[in-house]
Length: 499
Image (tube, rainbow, N blue to C red; front, side):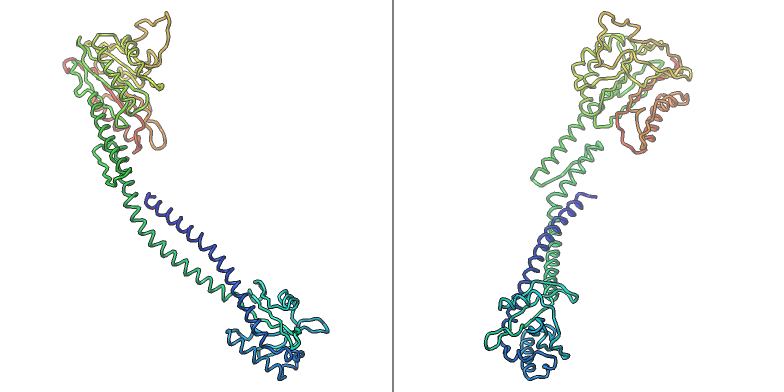
């Protein structure tokens, strides 16, 4: 999911929470206010209507047959006027009287066609309160089988001031709550409409001020990771985004310079030594790497060859590699044999190997007559193919930077280096561990066996071998990025006449 989509969704969610966070309390408040308004209305209507009813006439309506009396009809006309003035239905206004003999509350005057004077009614809290206090009273919201209701009750008094009945008006709360809910719905949709408009405007503002700069910087970082140093990150915002883009461009330029310098360390032309064919390549997994490959002529007609691997990859190991290269080339000019040369090289660069870093290295000298003298400081893979058989070049000492104290038991020269005789058709192969440790999408390594199998192929010359091995490693990774620098060196012993 893109950053712009995430930001939009987050902002929408926050705004929705704010809208509903405000609407829910408002709804509760509006509902409470609606209840208070209904109570006040019903209490006022009941009190006003009760004053309009003559109590002496109401005292004459006490039995079922009294619905035909003049008192009933006169009281009914007055109730009808109250109902019409307040838009009440016939079911919402009526009177009660208290049966003195039984203490039961009974219906008095009502507006329905089918009258039921004298029918018993349960005495509820609002009836009892109005009767006992003599004041108008409004009930709380209550619910029965017919819905939610609020009732207003007021006492009916005769000419002597005696309470002779109760006038009740009621209203279903649903109608009021429906109006509240409609207002809430209208408010909600208006808020959501405003939210949509604000989101659209906010999206374009956010896109211009944040998303586009972030996208440009993201593309710049991807290009940097892909070693596309020609990519320019363009951000013109005049803020920290623009400063970050300029930093990315500066970093790309510096890494490009560092890569070109390091590319210059790889021999541009192989030595033209009679009896030998050389092929090599080195590919850092980052802009710069920690692998070191070299093949150069020595003053006495011999040729020096080596592959080294500084732990890690990137800028730090590349700087150590550059220091190591300078020191090694200077020592090689002195004619030191491979074993003592590695010891001397370690002494010169050990102070540069900080943070636990070390260097594996195999360094060898090729003589015109086919003698090959090498010293191996913990480096693999390194091998010779002799008559179709693999001879692995074992280590003579630990990697450079892992210093052992031999005391007075310093190893003899023969223990620090080995001399072999190469014959026509023999092959020397050095690689860095980035070759054999290359992984596919199942984390399976390329392995040493594949290197050895390819090295034994007689149909491949040195150049073809390096190209094929590199293709095999790339195919094995199956699109997975390289996790380490990849370096290969192949030396074929060929007849002198082919030199």
